[in-house]
Amino acid sequence: MNAADWVVLLGTLLGIAAYGVWRTRHVHSLNTYLRGDAAIGWGTIGLSVMATQASAVTFLSIPGQGFESGIGFVQNYFGMPVALIIVCAVFLPMYRRLNVYTAYQFLGQRFDEKTRLLGAGLFLVQRGLSAGVTIYAPAIIISTVLGWRLDLVVVFTGLLVLAYTVTGGSEAVALTHRWQVAVIWAGMVTAVVVLLLRLPAGLGLDGAVHLAGAMGKLQAVDFSLDPSRRYTVWTGVFGGLFLSLSYFGTDQSQVQRYIAGPSLRNSRLGLMFNAVLKIPMQFVILVLGALLFVFYQFVPSPVFFNQAEWRRHAQDGRFHAIEVEHAGAVAQSQSAIRGWLEARASDDVAREANAQAAMVAASQHSRLIRTEAKAALVAADPRAKTKDSDYVFITFILTQLPHGAVGLLLAVMFSAALSSTASELAALGTTTTVDVWRHLRPLAAADEARNMRVARRFTALWGAVAVAFALFAGFAENLIEAINILGSVFYGVLLGLFLVAFFLRRVGGTAVFLAAAIAEALVIVMYFSLNIGYLWYNIIGCAACIVFSLVLQAVLPPRARSVEGPAA
Amino acid sequence: MRPASRADGRTEAEPPNVPGFRTWRGVYLFVFGWFVLVTVLLAVFTAIFS
Image (tube, rainbow over all chains, first blue to last red; front, side, top):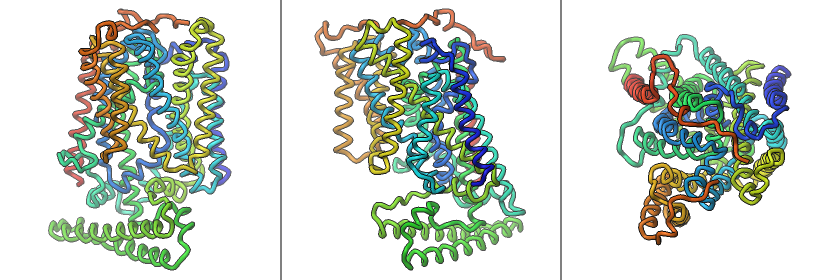
């Protein structure tokens, strides 16, 4: 990085944060602080929803996913359009009619206080812990490749996001999201253009796409019913529907984004904007990854993209031998690719098929050597980090982009981290204030100034928790995976609570509360006793909560199953 | 403190005010149709390049 990169990076990040603080310095209305500007347009709502969902990992990991496994991951988003239609038609009108600040207030009004606290508690535990991961995950990658101190990156990110989130609350989050998304799009377009310009002369976009396809990187959809396949149209449509419905319908970090605005129309259009754009956007990011794969067929690439980790362990001759073997395999692969390009130009179908088979075989040989390299790392240190696909795009950025653009792309990563963290912290502060603090201090609910002070303090407190967690996460890497699993363990039951509230009008507060508690216990017991993919717990938890609610409503004595709970 | 009420029956019935669409059902059908179209295009893309 040179001075131009630093100017672009710091100018972008500090400029957006300062803009957020300055524009919201006069926010004294609790309604604006917790829900955002009442005059916000549908475009800003749409961008804010998009920025909340797209964390830095989206832009670091997904190109790596395209590089490593192809673009089939796009199917994971197939459930999202239908989920957003359901949120627009069912969830959103109810939230606006009841004029709630949080999704869990709705549970209080539909059922009772204990169910509201249960919903809020599930959200706070899950989102409170994952906010630290949102900061830590990109910080560890960026600090590793640039040799920066991890703790400084974490603290810088935390302080920056806290500056405008605590000052301006939900309004500052939405305002900064607009600019952060603009930076993200500008940066990604820059990266795509540079990548296309750096492809070998004569190959072009058409040749690169055909090459990626021939290498098996462009299978976007898979209609297979084989349950062992990770990404298919069916897992995307059905699993993705549950995940998206949980996330967009019940997670306050998203609900807070779209309940802002002057009308139901603006909120709905903001969500429909995402329903239309999300799949094409993810497709482009994944294709970028597939084109990176093509690019690294022609440019010398490291055998292991996390070079800091590789150098830390590559002390003996075995690692050097792997590097030499990899360089030979890459040369062989390049020769096979040139053979395929010539065969393709000759219009000889049989020759082209033979050349393609040779090219795929050479590519698989390179892949085997990369697998061998990972095995060598584990042999040297069982705790070595062997997932290097997250480092592919950042390696391309740092080695291939011109100065200035490197700073812009790093600003993309930080902007994405800041945008999702800001939504999380605002949602955590709002939920703690509205659903927990007000429950404990019901008389203080009428004091707007005091509510503002408390909301700011809780937002700052959650920020401190997230930063502290991110600082210590390095000592407990396994904890991060556990927290990702924790999300699936809690999300299903939370969605079940809301689906009962919306669609099973005869089920009362006590029945659904007990059902949710039993369903959650069941999911936790299953998690510790079964060996199934943790995404399944979303569906299991949701279904268990609904079924138990119906059963308990039928068997509980009439007094205990009253349908109408007290108002929030 | 209760937030000032902004929602009523009128806002729920408000039209989308999007050119070409008179009802929200039309907007939802368009979005669903767009999703189906994108899926078909991705299937065609897969068939051509895979």
